[in-house]
Image 1 (cartoon, helix red, strand yellow):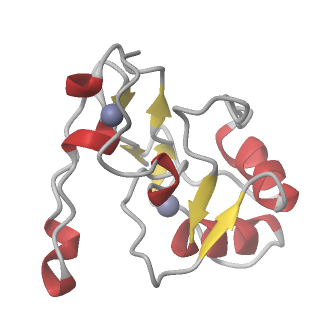
Image 2 (tube, rainbow, N blue to C red):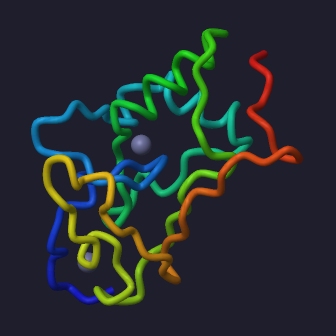
Image 3 (spheres, rainbow, N blue to C red):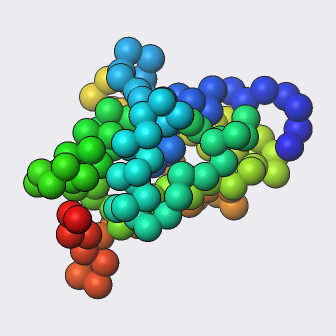
Length: 136
Ligand SMILES: [Zn+2]
Ligand SMILES: [Zn+2]
């Protein structure tokens, strides 16, 4: 990975869904919110990975942590995808979500385009074969 810094800090993106987290929005550090990591593991059947890497994101957005945490406690919240966003080390900054994504502001923010890149692929929605997992 080239040494130039990314356009945006990796930790402005949610590890779980990959959404850009606005400066004033709440975010949760995965290293100190172990319940979120536990819930992530239980929901997706995947460990939280690469938390020792600089190129990885280490935070969860408010909506993912609220929904995962609620689901873990047996409430009726769920994440709207069966497979979370996946992350690999970008080969360079043209393969780098933190450089490529251009977050739109205000009411347009939901239209921000998140490309599929070799280093990262979008969450996969739930389907009938892949429903919201039952809480424990
Ligand atoms: Zn970059
Ligand atoms: Zn999220």
